[in-house]
Structures are given as structure tokens and as C-alpha cells.
Length: 273
Image 1 (cartoon, rainbow, N blue to C red):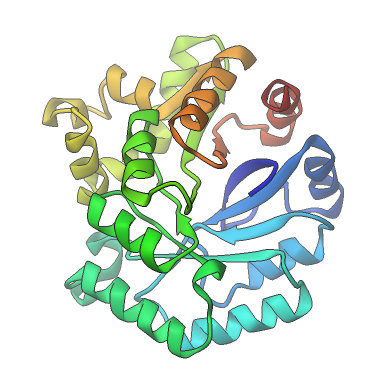
Image 2: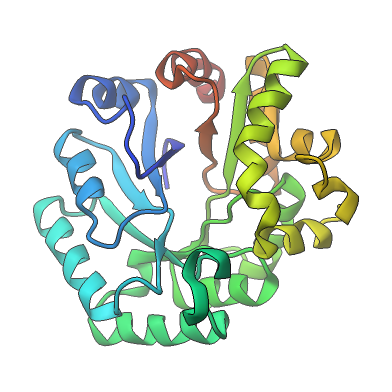
């Protein structure tokens, strides 16, 4: 997967305009990952309609929302309109967001992949949200690779070991371009707040050496500094390079600064160099 990666919420933003998308392409961004993407894939299709060379990937579609046959149909529609420019990312989401349907998530993922197989969705056309070793191995065995969210370069190294050398690995990385520690921590804690109550993430952080104390009071400074790359352009580039050296094929940047496009204008030259 070539070029820089960018992570954006499916709720839309000022970046979903032809002029902004053209600028992102000119800056070297090759893939736009859509967080919490609705399974109808209309927003992905709109981004593709408004751009020229970007690949759009879902990061992710919740497998509890629609059966594989329905999602496969939406994927086919998008690819018929934009051949070679769409990558389907799926994941099991969280019990707090799914409710009582959320049982045996690993088995759900396996059966969902079986359903996508039956619908003719090839393994190399899909990626899996994966944090723990079992789902990472599943991503390597039955998908193009994995898209971990809210992780560290240390996790990227563990993910690469679990996947092996071939599969795609694209971790998400939150970024605040500022040297003001207070500003960086404020924006970081705002972004982390909802995730502190989701066991999929806290359990993964515990595996990485954090403790329950790190999740209290909006998250410890140590947790914020680990999950959010902040500082000047060199500091952000350093974190991205750590992921790359640990085995990432691409890093999907989620910019937390209010003016994301202006921030990306400053970051892109440093990251491409």
C-alpha cells in the first residue's frame, strides 16, 4: 500500500470536498481510512466520486450491522464505479456499541469471513480490525492484512510477528501537531475518552504493559503520550518511523488539531521526506 495514510470519521468533514481531496492527493496521501463506516458504503463512494487517485478503505464496517451478502453487494457497487480504489475493512466492534447481539466475537468474524467467501469477496480485497494475537492471525490467514486502532509501535511489532512478513499492516495513529503539552494532552484526552470504557482497547493496553491506573481520570499522561503523537513535525515523523520500523506498511494518521487540512499541509512534507 503506497503513499501516506489518513484516518477520518465517517461523519464527514471539511476534507470531503473535491478541492480538499485533490490537495490531499497532491500532498502524497494515498489512502483514506473511514472510521465506523456505515455498511451501505455511501460515504466511501462519495469520497471516491470526489477524488481521482485515492484509495478509500473502511476502518471499519461493523459486522453485526448487515449480513455478508448485503455488504458484499454494496462493495460490488462501489468497485464497479471505482475499480481498484476501494478496500473493505471489517471488525467486531464492541459490546457497548452492539448490545446483546455481541456474543463470541471471534466466531462471528470467522463466520462473516465465510459469508464473504461465499459471496465472492476475495481475501486480498478485505482487511480485519485486529488487536489480539488470535484475530491478528485470522487477519493474516484470511484477509489482505490488519488495521489495528489505538496502538503503539510496540504493538505494531507484535502484530507484524503474528501476521508474518506478507500481509498488510496499517495501524492508526492519533496526532496533535503542537509543542504545547497542555494543548496536546487536552486534545488527546478528548479523543481517548470514549475508548477508556471499551474492554477491547483496555485489555490490549494491559497486554502492552499499562495498568488500570492508566485508565483513571481521563487517562494518565503516560497513556496519552503513548497513544497520541504530539510535538513538531520531527516528533510526529519520529513516531511514524517507529511504526514503519516495527513492520507497518502504512500508518493511518488521525489528526486531532481542529484545522486538519492546515495541519496536513505542514505534516506531509516531513512525512514524505
